[in-house]
Amino acid sequence: MARPTVSVVIPTYNRANLLKRAIESVLNQKFEDFELIVVDDASTDNTPEVVESIADGRIRYIRLKRNSGGPVARNTGIKKARGEFIALLDDDDEWLPNRLDIQIKKFENLDRGVGVVYGGFYYVSQQNGRVLGKRLPKYRGDVYKHLLRENFIGSPTLLIRRRCFKRAGLFDPKLKSSQDWDMWLRIARHYEFDYVYEIVAKYYVHGKQISFNMKKYIPGREMFIRKHKDIWKNPKVLSIHLSQMGLLLLIGGDPQKGIHYLAHSISIAPFNIENYQKLMELAFDSRSIEYIKKIIHFNT
Image (cartoon, rainbow, N blue to C red; front, side, top):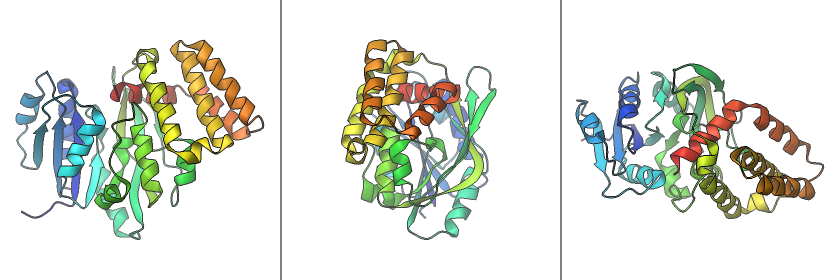
């Protein structure tokens, strides 16, 4: 059997009501040379029946014996992937039909030193399907220093050379949150990034309460910072992370710890204007807050 050009990995857990939309958005791609690997993280709902109801030979269904979390499910799919490129899609998100086509064409004109092509995405309300906003690509080339400061890449938009994972490793299941950010940073150490300046995906926002999983998100973010010495050894970069966590803790119902983080942020880099700018952006951009809420929800 010939190897497909792209391996698409969808990890899923108890989202049978949303999974079909994600699968169909892959099957409806203009570019058709792909395999779709659905990794069921031991769902207890009717996920197997949903997958079996879709008749398409490009679908490969893998069911884990026990619930192990999103990173393990993603890693399982990546290990089974046969394509030259790997694309990731969460079970509640959706691709636009041109997603793979324009990104494969982009890769055809790029140097092999480029490991990732990403794109823009819409924020969409899961409740009513309304488009809440959009995020377009900002950086290309050596994006490592930019990624130290912020995760500006939406996971449903990346097309990644499979060899990137062989060099950078897989998703870190030890992290309670920020696994995507950690993965992109590790790839960016070795490969350049490029983008297509188009919307290629829909990122659905559920409106989950941020306080619900804050006890997992903050320790995960702290572990992420400790893992990357280029963050915690740089006061200006560290101050950005501390102030963002401080704001999230204030919103999430832990004002004492939130104020502590904000004060620490100011004390280590009082004249870091970039920190204040990013903090104001986060405070007044409800879409960014919702983006973080969803990441927290996915990683628990």
